[in-house]
Length: 371
Image 1 (spheres, one colour):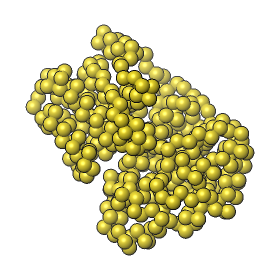
Image 2 (cartoon, one colour):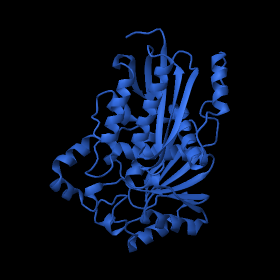
Image 3 (cartoon, helix red, strand yellow):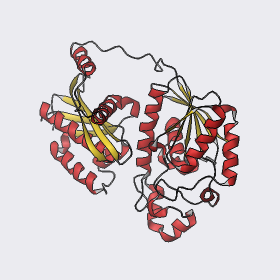
Image 4 (spheres, helix red, strand yellow):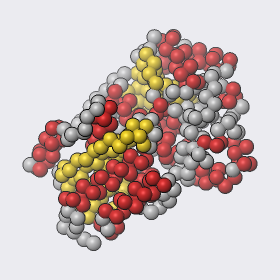
């Protein structure tokens, strides 16, 4: 169905904990001029990132339909999972997301809606709205549209674009020292050790690795060490902080993948006990281990956490102690590699990977897997 009017929906959602306190944001724009026509955001209580993303999509489509039910709508999101599922290329297996996907498809005729993926840096408007909604809920109040957003819309409708940021962002970059946690007994046995598994502490060899990392030149000058909630990561971070005097901050977004029923197993044991599930997981980033977390979900929380780092710590050196999957996911994003490269990147226990993250979303990889 053709229409003289084209609308653009940008939507996002997030969860602080996955699942945890969640919210969504969506903005509707005139596709030709970029004029902001509507903004919606809401805190939705406890939910996962993916459910929040679907809620953002649904709200954005409904706002577009209210503006003009005959318009053609281009939906742009940085969630590859939602885009691929709504485009019909990936199955929607989760019951809550399947229901929301059905509701979204019912808002407008299929021929009027087009779905496309955009980098996270290009979806900052919707991301900001989602975070505003979650912040408002944490403060015990309802989200309200900000005057800044209203001013942006007014200047756009007047034909005057707001001042653009200089090329390259114009700000100071964040120098990020990525450290994979030191060894545990499960690391040494090459067993999976996910975010809801045994949570072992460092082994004797791991404690020595952590001490050596604390002496490395890369961590000097860092004012903060950010760590996942997991014991092996916190112990590695504390060794670095004790040597450098840096502050330690804990962020669950950097926890390892939830390996579900595979937790504690070696790769050979997984292949033997779950051959079909392992084959599907190995080829499709949207497939999760039984009872666990898919790679696309790990990528989503890593992207959100990395965006927060760029904003909060611009111009500083930060040490981030995390795990194999989150580390590789962030490195792949910086390199522009697809999910098929996830298992081909080697990051040893107590290794250092050096990144420079710019505020416009671009990145530089300075070193990988220093040991």
